[in-house]
Length: 121
Image (tube, rainbow, N blue to C red; front, side):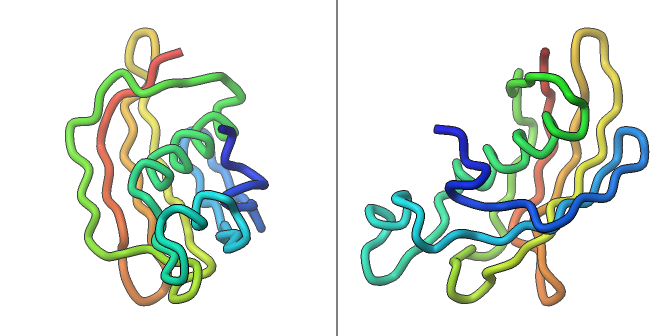
């Protein structure tokens, strides 16, 4: 499932080479929340990771996939009720066939996820 315009929508994007800042809005009507969890929707960690990957694809203009994740820390729970809008900050470094990625998912109050890994083409 492609998450952009289903799970989240991009409100704005600023890019400087291989660094980007995406302002996104979670979509509480997404079917993901019907099963995770009805009446108390929580954003699945895997969807947060996929959101980062999709934003990295938009930043590079290439189809990418994770070749590995070295560190992924979920530091707070993401819900469309408590944090309906988030920022995805991405820094990419070219590495052979792909990119090293460092990313965060946050809002003005806190960081929800920190990720470091490798993306391949």
